[in-house]
Length: 242
Length: 242
Image 1: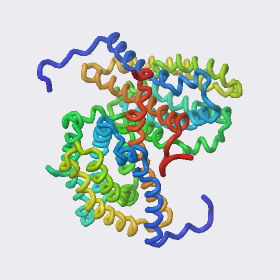
Image 2: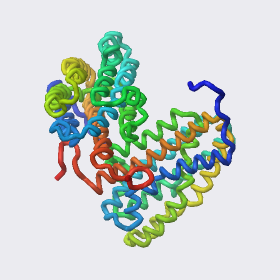
Image 3: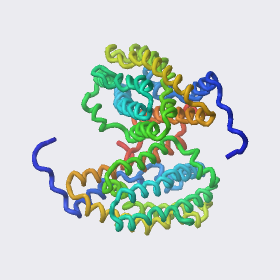
Image 4: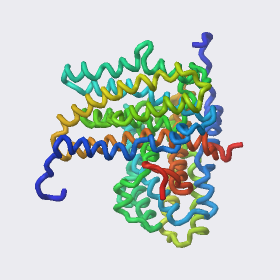
């Protein structure tokens, strides 16, 4: 549209730096819900509602990863990516660990698993993530997973914060967060390697960054919704809440 | 799952009453953003941002209506429904009237049309509406449009409120709202007639009500997002806003 030659792609290291910069400043560790959580300022109900609503996000992960697998024609890529689905779906995998966490904060496992009390906006955001992965190219879908770059630090902080501030949650129940530290590291390394090798035009690099930004909006919006409903409950359908 | 015989479908009048009851109490006319708007308490910026964000919803309407048309095997149904697409896409149709409204509140038409400043949560909710229509059966997709039952009253109130409280918006610019009164009436009559004739089991009637409820959540969430961002702006990506 602007005429002129297309911009040359950035060299790998610069592209990685771009991704890291855009992702880092939008990552949800800055969100005020997480700040309150890590400062020990959430009530039991507020902690529970985060666990319950975030479970819906957790359920979307193996689904979006299966869509990513379905987009690849390369058995080697599929072999690499499929462990992500298994990591969540195994009998003592991520979904099961999350349900144990839910029990650990005093929620009913079946209520959480039903997803019937998930906030509408949380549902829209998480479904939007699945749609993003469905609609865009494989490399963009992979790029959207790169929020995992930033996950290990957040998980480590979280375990320490929960052990300190919410001692009524048994330490065993925090296994999900512990298990994510090495996995998120390995997963994000695989993903960044793939993205650098396959986003070979500047336009595609831009699209990868845009996909990652949209993904940060999903995570951020989830917390906005929980904040609005449980930190500052105000009005709901029908008018002011009692 | 519960065993026993399936429930008999409700007679048409009772089914309509059910739809009306569930829709009415969740309709976004109760939302505090609309209350502020109709009480003349929005600032110019707050009115503008509602117009800008709601435009994204407006752009989804002809797309979801085309999906509805694509789901029908019946030329008579398609002839009936297609005028909705045309109502929005005509040269002086709904989208054009909305852009004039945007200019009327002092926004730049191209900025609004680009949708680049739409809030992430508004985008998730509106995209969720399109997905709802795509995923579900034709009769459920039609049922989700039945919020139009309640639109004429809201549009009439809005025109009066804007003329009274925001006299700096030229009356001509309110044409979109005026034009929707007879159209929403006609459209919702066509849709309710279709739904009553085609939702012939209790289970399908329940699914139609569920689709309508999800749709009310879309409209409600749009206003929640605009409220959070422009009435109570707090934190955004990166931390507290200046």
